[in-house]
Image 1: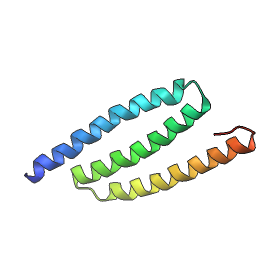
Image 2: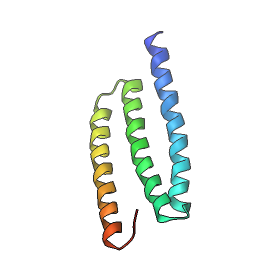
Image 3: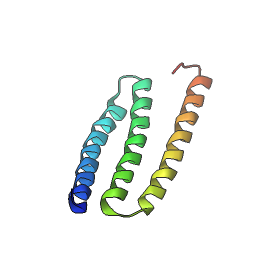
Length: 93
């Protein structure tokens, strides 16, 4: 398998993850419950990290991995903050 073919596979996979992210964005906006919206936003964050990692591999740009790590940390902190806010408000996740 040549390097160009492997890079193309990474880029096509990243494009498929972008399509999945668009579908998750719909669920985040139109989710019937708060839990659906919370889960969709969390999946969107994880999806973004995967897209950035695939772009780093496909384009040969290692700085995309730095951004992916920072985004993963922010996504984790956001999930904790939203969960804490929801529990303090009296709701149960």
